[in-house]
Amino acid sequence: MSQVMGGGRRRPGRAVTMNDVAAAGVAQSTVSRILNDTPAPIPVSPETRERVLKIARELGYRPHPIARALRGAPTMLLGAIVRDITDPFFAGAVEALVLEAKAHGYSVVLGHARAAEDEALALTAVLEARQCDGIVLLGDFRAEQRLVEDLSSGHAHVVGLWHGTSRDHPFPTVGVDNRAGVRAALAHLRGLGHERIAFVGAESLGDQHDRLAAYQESMDEHGGMPSSCFLQRVSNTIEAGSGALALLLEAEPRPTAVLAATDALALGLLHGAYQLGVRVPDELSVVGFDDIPWSSASVPPLTTVKMPIAEIIATGVALCVGEGAWDGEGAPPQQVFQPQLIERLSTARAEQAALSG
Image (cartoon, rainbow, N blue to C red; front, top):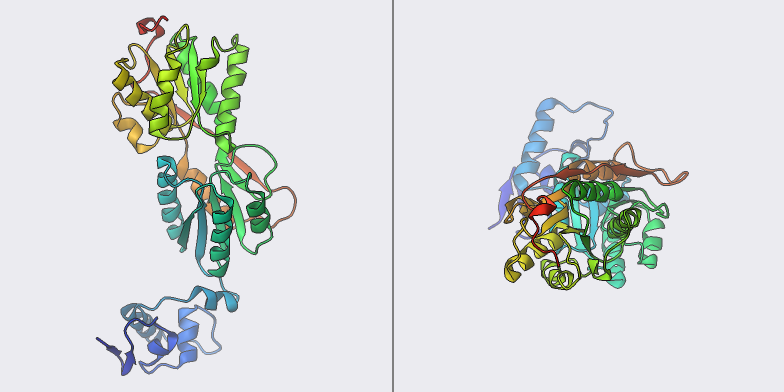
C-alpha cells in the first residue's frame, strides 16, 4: 500500500528521504536544515519546524549514516565487537552498552567475533563501512594483532572494555581491579577458616590472566598450593566448571573451598557438586566473579565479586563519543574500577567442611 502525505507518494520498501518529507510543500533546503539541526540565515518558524518534524515522524524518516558522514556530521552509530557473546556476563554488558549508547543518542551495531581474528577483521570492515563514530571491544582482543593494528589505524575512536590491566594497549581501556577482587574473595574464604582453596580459571587473556595471577600470588604468600590439582584451567562454560570439580576432588587432601574466575564456572561447580552429592556450603564453599543475574538465583545463592558494569560502560561510551574521547596524544588512558564482594549462601566456615581428604 502506497503511503501518501501532503501530496507526496512513496514506494513501499524504499527508505524515506528528505524529498519525501519535502513533498508536503516545504523547500528541501529548509527540510534539510531542520532534520540536520543546522543554522539557517533566515530563522525557521516554530510552526514550520514542528510541521516538518511531524511529517518526518509519520513517514518514519531516518537519517542515512553514510550520507551524514559524507557531510562531516556524526553518524550516531557505535560499533561493538564481542569476544564471546555466549558468556552470560557479556550478554548483560551488551544490554548495558545499548542503553548507555541510547542515552547519548546513539544506536549500536553489534558483531560477534567468537575469538577468531579473521571474523573480527571482517567485522571491522563492516563497521567502517557503516561509518561508526566509535568502536567498543568487549573482551580482550590483544592476541589478534592484525585486528588491533587495523582498529588503531582507522578513523573511529576505539575503547577496550575488560581487557585486563596491563599497559600495552594502543587505545583507551576501562575495566575492573581484578587483583583486588580476587584478594577480597580469598580474604573472605580465609576469614572463614579455609586454607585449602582451589581455583578454576578460563583462558588466560585480559581479566582472566589478572585473576589467575592474583590467585597464584596470594597462594604463594600463604604457603603455596597443597596440590597441583588445586589449579584447573578450562573453557568458560557451566559444563566445564562442572567437570573441573570432579578433578578437584581427586586431590589429596581435598579443597574445602573453590574460587572460580567467572560466575559461569562457579555455577558449573554448583551443578557438579549437586551431581556428585557434595553439599555446598556444608562440605565445599564456592565463590564466583562477575555477579551475573543468575548468581543470586542459584541454589544456594552464589557468593561472588561484583563489578560496577554500568559505570564501566558509561565511561567507555564517554571515551568513544563524549567529551572524554581520547585525542590520540600521549599514553592512552586506562580507567580501573573497584569491585565489591557480595556474600551470599555458597560459603560457610571451614569447620563445616566434611571433605577432609
